Length: 386
Ligand code: SF4
Image (cartoon, rainbow, N blue to C red):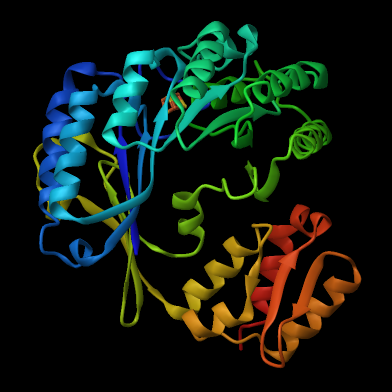
């Protein structure tokens, strides 16, 4: 079983906080689609083409800048090259690209899930973020998504913005919840050095909020979403029961995934562990279709490295991890030092451990522990070293 991620690197304009790989030159869209189709074909009869593809995710950038005809061409070639039996086919969209007709076309193409980049409904914040959409477009897009009737949809929300009050955040959350979304991804604004926002902070023109303020924002988000029946199942993701994002959850479980398009990452298991690589974030070699020179950051991961990563990712999710998975999939066993340390964390109400039988235990972080996830996981891993 595997997933496919397609990176569509086009945006109308640069959001002030964004450090994803994207371009604003729309004349390159069709040449890019042609190259993407060639990249997909280059995987014909390679190890990935033997995998059953259960999830497909169009991310970016802004995939909704592609026409339905372009998306249809891509999906047709995917179907032709891979063994596709997708349970979840997601497309990221921005509200300003949504129309009733386009959504129906996407549904007819087989998209089951839409991920809407709302971020906020507050006109001042949208302008601060340099988003291309307005509040009214966000409202209209969510109305249309509900009417179209996808199996699921999700919306992104950003909190912890400079100058954002708790009242303003509450208004954003309430408005978003009025559309009864089955899933929400809520992110604290991160300030990346090479972005426009990062430069303004560096110049002292913008003051990032204090940690206490961001924590109060997060608590408000979590409490309001919980009351609306959306449980936090991972650091930034909240869903109604059974509406968790399958594609993204599979990254945390090291399910094989193939990334297509510039800057996309891939992971494929082999007999020694797994290989992970990235397509270079550069449209020029991509359009030259020289696939062999496109890959960089190639890493061969041992089972121990994968197990430590799984611990790191799994303990950031509410369902945690079982020792059975660690030993069965990665051959990794917790030693006495690690078990003793976990018991101490259990007494501190940071870790929840439940014995399944004499050999196996379920391990997860409590709400208190999730706030200290980085520390707990790093200490746990360091005690596994000889
Ligand atoms: S639309 Fe998304 S990918 Fe594009 S600049 Fe904005 S945040 Fe980045």
